[in-house]
Structures are given as structure tokens and as C-alpha cells.
Image (cartoon, rainbow, N blue to C red; front, side, top):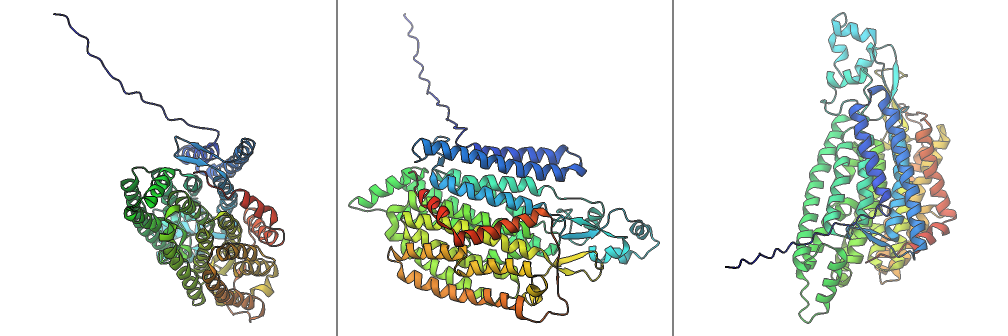
Length: 577
């Protein structure tokens, strides 16, 4: 009997291609984040801060240089863009523009996080405190929190704006001991680098699964960073918990939407989803129910990140409770990344359903502009007022998406550039205005003076601080010769050119309402009487000074000479599908 050898069919497994050159900016950022984690694990405590600061800033600068090299190479090759990582990443013109903007914001954000002159805390190793601990002084004097305990010390030292012990219960002996020991939460640097890497990937995703991973990569570090404030620790932890819980819900909606998109089209690739929906929309039966459900669920996750109504409830509490460097970073960078992903999903994946989703976005944009402006008028805290202001601006930026053409895309990207620097500068300026710590004496700075009533007369006492903060407020209001005026004019023109005249009218009304509370603060700073408990301005180091100066210069330059950036945004307004 002759045996027949069985035939074995082996499925060929094709290794995925990795275009290292195209994704090198993101690889550099993630690589620096990994190295920073190793620094936290092995470097001595006394040298972690300078190493982390230099490593983070240097890594971001290297990533920016790599991004410029990628952009130059793409321009020479035609400039339309390329797919990388088997289509999971799209390196096209909007990706390069938004990633460059994110890296610039990240550089000044990391510098601001490294600031160590705005806070002054109890001096480490005080003999008086040791005596109090041993029983020669009443224990009550050192157990009422850092403010009371500072009376038992001989002086104060400079510190950053992050708690020395994030795992400790606020205002306990454990937290105070960490302060006295000179502990520094340098973990904020690797967490920030991981968040920046996720933000860079988010608007560059070519499929929904990679987009979900990017969403979690930059969200999880932000949840932690929000709970690390040195002052008002309970509010900071509350902000972190609220952001985590609501963010988890929004991520679940996004993932559920991705599942529906796969069920409706058989793919998670945005380009394939767009092709499938286009064919379904042109078919006789026109079965687009599942794609619309998918888009609705995806939109919940994305609109949550930009802070659009009715998904905005987390923003005021989180912006108020988070450390000011984290608030500034979130207000500027998160909007850039989230709007980049939102634009890609709507333009590339679900563009053929415009007639279905446009009325819903109209309602969201109108509600966002009006509710944000009206709620901002009622605020007495500057950080909460700026938070509601950011909600209002999210509505303005949505007008560029609704326009749904190249002019609208360009206007949206320019608005993101103008708004990012203005809002970062505003939050950074708020951080230098401090109360006087009455318990600890004049050498220990108090918490941020965020009550609007406390800012009365501040512009007369500190003209430079008042002038810079007024510049940011005027930009938010859209006053001519500021970046905000050009940005609003651009998105209004794009919306009006595509049948959105009603949206423009609502936007003008919202701007008028917003101008009231912006001008109210300017009037208080320069014309109101100085209160008895007037705060003082703490002179920051070059890290914060340079960050605020850059934001001020960008706000003015984009208002007077906006054309180069406008041209750059218009050249970049073309997705690769």
C-alpha cells in the first residue's frame, strides 16, 4: 500500500510594517517617558528633579526637530501624507500641524510644571519641629496642617506646586513629614510625557481601536495629575475622582461606538468606514441606522474631551481643583488633541452622513456657546470663569467643523493655535497671584488668590501682570489686534459661507455676553479700590516667566501678523483618506 504524504497548508503571516521615520516624533516622546520612569526608580531623590526637567524638555525639543524633518520630507514627496503602522497611524498635513502645536504647548507646560518659586513651604529639618515632635512643644501646634506647622520652623524653602506625597491623606502628619523632608513629586514629568505621547497619537489615528488606545494613554495620566495639587488637596482629589469617573463613562461610550461601527461596516479603519457608509448612502435601501448609532456613541466620547454641552459638567470642577500647571496643560493641549480626532472622525469616517449629524452639531454648538457664556457671568472664581470660557470657545471651534470644508478645517486649526497659547498664558498668570499666609508669616506664600474680588486694584499695583492678563482676556473676547479676533472671524466666515448664518448670529451674541465678564475683570484690576486682604504677585523663575512671555507674544503677533500661520493652516487643511 502506497502512502500519500499529507499536504500541509501554512498560512503566511505577514509582519506589520513599522515606518520608524514617520512616527519618530511620537517614539521619541514615548521613549523619553519610559526613561523618565526608570529615572524615578533608580536615580537618587536629590537629583531626580533636574534630570527629569532636562530630560523632558530635551525630549520634546528633539521630537519637535524630528517632526520638522518629517514635514520637510513629506513636502518633498508631494505632501499628501502617508499611512504608517499598517494603516493604524496617518501622517498627513493636519497630523503634522496639530502634533507641532501640541509639542510647542508641551514644552512650555513642562517648564511651568518645573516652577519652584511660587510656593514657599516649611523648611526641612527644623530643630524646633523636632523638639515639638519629641514633646517639648504641644503636638497640636504641628498637627493642624502645613500652615500651622510652619510656625514651628525657622524659615521656608521654595517648592513646586505639587503635593510631596500624593498617596497621603490631605493635611495629615504623613503629608507634612514629606514636606519637611523635602520630597518632590517628580513623577509628574513621566506622566506628562505619556500624556503628550497619547495626545500626539490621538489625532493621527487611522482606525478607531488605535484611537481608543490613544484616548486612554493620555487620559489616565491626566486623572492622576489632577489630584496632586499642593494646596486645596481635598478639592484636587475630588477633581481627580470626578474626571476619572466621567472620563471612564465617556471612554465606554466611545468603545461601544467603535463596536457599532465595526458591526455596521465590517471595519475599524476610518477610510474603510467612510467608503462603506458612502456606498450604503447611495444604495436604494439607504440603511444608515447602525452607522448613525455608532457616530452618536463615538461623539459622546469625543465631545466630552472638548467640553461641549451637555458633556461639560466636569470642566469647572477639574480646572479649579487641579494644580495650575496641569489645568493650563489640559485647557490647551487636550482641546487640540480632541478636536483633531473629532475632525478626522467626521471628515474621513462619517462625512457622507453630514445631512444627518449636522442638525445635532448645530444644537450642541449653540448650547455650548450660550450656556458657557451665561454660566461664566455668574462665577466669582477666576479659574472657574476661565473654565466656562473654555466651554464657550469649544462651541466657537465647533463652527469650523460644521462648515465641513477646507476653509472650515483651516479655521479650526488656526483657532486651536490661537486659543491654546492664550488660555495657557491666562492660567499661568493666575498662578503667580498669591494670598499671604497669615499663619506662617510673610516668608511663606499662601494659596492662589482666585476670587475675582481679590484682584481689585491688582493692575495698578502690578501693571505688567495686569497688562498681560488683560491681553489674554481681550483675546478671549475677540477684540481686534489680538489672536482671538482673527480666530473668531475665520470660523465665523467659514460657517457663514456654508449656510451657518444663524450660528454666526448666536456666536456674536455669545461673544457679547462673554465680553461682559472679561471686561469686568479688567475694570476691577485697574479701576476698583484695593481690598484689605489684597494678594501679592510672587516673582516666578525664568521657567514660568518665559512661558507667559511666549504666550503673550503669540497672542499679540497672531492678532497683528496672522497671515503666515493662516497660510500654514490652510496648506495643512487636507486629510489623507
